[in-house]
Image (tube, rainbow, N blue to C red):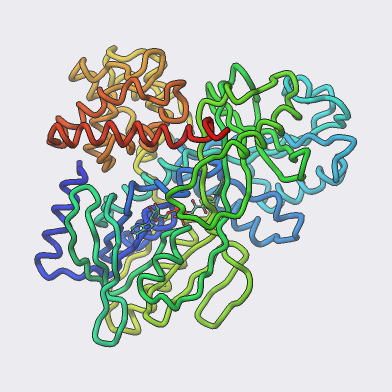
Length: 560
Ligand code: FAD
């Protein structure tokens, strides 16, 4: 068990002993977490820092899909699709509790750009590229079968719809568990730790960073033989810390999702839609008791930390939804919550010898040896991570600083923490039973199912806490499955250090609860105060910070 405070103390001891990490990774999104896991598993000493919480950037604001990218087929990018569907298979194996099959319905209308035959042909290629090991092979639904499968879908002009399979995930928890596995392999992972400057050696090479603890305000130097910049949409800003003459590489765009109650819009599968105004692809995605719709795609050049949905974004998404699901007649008052993320897309203009450019991601080594990785997808993070760690290992080798014995990372075979002890027959009912047994009758069935669904086998650890201390079995919000024991687990095992971490990323209360968890913030903050030894002032600050975060996500409501 490691709290953030203990993790910080471990890292302080390492540095006080004149410690120099093999690798400092800046940015705890999926890319940085993946690199930390890969590097630590190889046996490198690693420090991963994030200025906010793990996954607080784009990696908790995606469409939450682990998918092959059907749209690349149109551009004949077969190798990209092959790579993504291969990764989908691996992630289903190492994180079956987090990466789960999801049906995608692709309705074809009389007005559609492609007919049923062509779309179906594309599906065969898609299944073929996954070597027919998709979660399931696609099938073609007739107009009648579509109406049965998705009663709410607009049937005017409908010809039929192929149903194909990809996966859904919880992006924030996938990132978190990747980072926790890095911790198990020896990495020091420090959230709320911002890089404010880069250190240099006599030759001008980057040799570490000045890191500010955002929660306490103190600063220290973290020395490292190689530094990876995995700051996603912030990566040009991080490069500029080294030299203001670096040319910007990103062309970021904003993507917004809205969440509504499934009672107002129910879909059984993810439904692929094309916006009636501009033809952009969108999804309506089932999310248990909720449905989310996204995404927009607009240029975004401001600070990625300020990104939020606007009224225009929400209206755009509602218009598409009401076109495809006319009877639901969604309005702004149906929107429970929103999220907005910034895609760290690579600008396409130039490429030089120092970079390995692909359509999806880029690894670049600047003249000061700062290694930057940006772009890509959640789905392909594991491969990107291996590639960037290879690049760092090469630099370490050239500098004569590569530790002699490196192990194989085995990131494609070793389970993430919640999948350790996962049943060989993939029977989730057995995982639920583990949780039920651990709860010793203290938790109702819906809570046990929920704990198994989000924590996998580790759900039993959370249930055990509630079994030992009845107070921890209390629901945080009436009618919802989250319980107080999760606060303890998130603080003691999952590095949660603020109420925001708990509500937004360790759980999804922020997005799913009609009140966005505001009614529970005082309870959670009080428990965190007990666990983390906060003063009253810190507790009050944390409550306010959470309330502000909720207000920011609701800003769009007051724009006109
Ligand atoms: P981030 O997650 O943004 O991480 C960067 C981190 O760096 C942040 O946590 C930030 O706090 C930290 N940081 C910044 N500056 C500093 C500093 N100075 N010091 C310390 N830390 C710092 N991909 C898929 O595979 N499937 C999808 O369904 C999908 N949908 C998407 C939908 C949208 C709307 C968007 C925007 C993207 C989507 N993607 C999807 C792409 C995917 O989400 C991103 O490629 C991925 O999350 C990027 O991760 P990252 O780690 O590179 O960046």
